[in-house]
Amino acid sequence: MDSEGYKKEINIKRHTMAHVLAAAIKELFGDVKFGIGPAIDNGFYYDFDMEHNLSPDDFENIEEKMNEIIKLNLDMTKEIISKEKAFEMFKNEPYKLELIEEMPENEEISVYHLGDKFTDLCKGPHVENTKMLRSISFKLDRVNGAYWRGSEKNKMMQRVYVYCFETKDELKEELRRVQEAMERDHRKLGKELGIFMFSELVGKGLPMWLPDGFILRRTLNDYIMDKELALGYKHVMTPSIGSVDLYKTSGHWDHYKDDMFPSMKVDEEEYVLRPMNCPHHMMIFKNSLHSYKDLPIRIAEIANDFRFEASGSLCGIERTRAFTQNDSHIFCRPEQIKEEVEGVIKLILDVYKDFGFKNYKFRLSLRDKANTEKYFGHDDLWEKSESALREILKSTGAEYYEAPGEAAFYGPKIDVQVLSAIGHDVTLSTVQLDYQLPERFELEYVDENNQKVRPVVIHRAILGSLDRFIAFVLEETKGVLPLWLSPKQIKIIPISEKFNAYAEKVNNQLIQNGVRSEIDGKNESLSYRVREAVKQKLPYVVIIGEKEMNNGTVSVRTRGSKDNLEYSIEEFINKITGEIKDRV
Image (cartoon, rainbow, N blue to C red; front, top):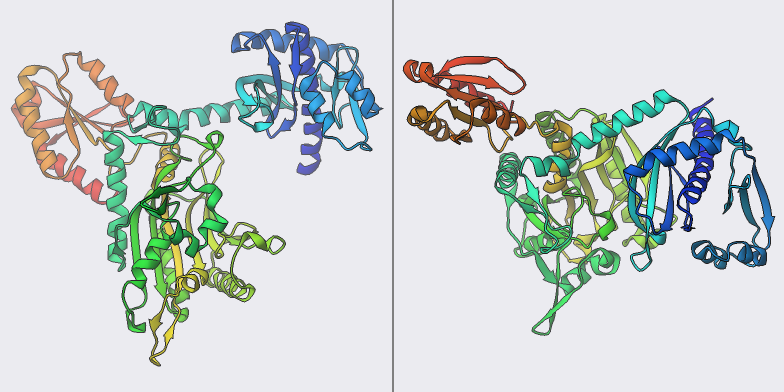
């Protein structure tokens, strides 16, 4: 059976299993109001409105009851009924009645009877009899709160998720993958490592970076800014707000307003938190007259931006309402497009090499020609810019695929899709070609014929959102950050107080050589302090006792090792600074 056939067959079984779950819940807990129960990628879920608060303590009983129902060899019988009969049949089911109410008068309504155990409003299809489910392997996963039909205006229901696969081996592999994902979850790692925090009082989706998190961000800032400076980028700083008129000029107000925070009125002017930095950078270019000899002009900024994400879509620092972008806009002549885009791609690959990213593809994100109202600008400019990016990708020999409908509203783009360690397809970097904003802002430079003409703008983000990038790196490394990126690089542990002075000497020498080092002199046992350092995933632990103090050495334990190696202070400093320089 091919993959499509398998997917179709397993989803039929999963959907039938959702009815089995509903029947089990009804039998075990009595007065239950039923929502919906679709198949999903790794199983199914069902929404319930009930007095009893389901918890993992209930899972074993529910699974036993589901297996009992399956062994009864119950027929799944389809019945076509009128809308009038549907209202009568589900008169005590408010959520089903809502769905029935919305159905057209002449629409065929089908229900499925699971023997005499449970009847549900459903289009199907399903297996003919529960004996066909006996080989299925399933396991209840979790219970979450879920608003009916996804609207915060509706009642919160209890959503039961269930893993469901054809074989025990498939279920076992899925549980292993889920456990791996939990261990890599950046929200868990960020809390354990003291990287960031959230506060309901501060506001949803607004991360606060703790001291170690700030060091991590600053290290990334310095890293990417140094690379950009070496390539001729000029860094700027612009306000985190702008006038509504600025965004009307750029087109964001008409095409992006739903994703922006509401405007605020100050002294008869309307301002808005900026969702991106392009309009500000357009105005910086427009601030002075440029000759064709000045181009390309590469303006870069590590900028704070704000977007109104729905509360249900917020996810740690991966998806927030306040974030920081490694952003840049390259203003160039048309004949410079190829060289500039290729330069950006080269920079992306250089950065990915430093971080060890290997599983990635380029995506050419195009306009959806069947839904052009989502975009602005002329068809000929879209064709021109899409063709230019396509030709550049071909000329570089990069592996890429095309994705209609994924373009920005003002232009096509090259997105770099990185496959994460847990199988997620993540967009990290992007390059966008834009003829539209120069038109809207009436940008000009003086060409070789002394004529004023429009530049082309290349939007690019290498690290993208620093917040999302850090989330990705935490999950890729399980929090075991490389030495150069680790907020804490060295932990020095003196065996007792009498070695504190020597520990201070070693610590000061490390710090003077640019190493992030600190002393753990707590009144705890050596083994306890070493365990704590291991939990913090520190690259190196330095242990100092009588021998080290007398010999002028340090005893060093490398992350992941239980052995200690002895170095002179100078040897150790040279070793560490060399590894940091080489980004080990």
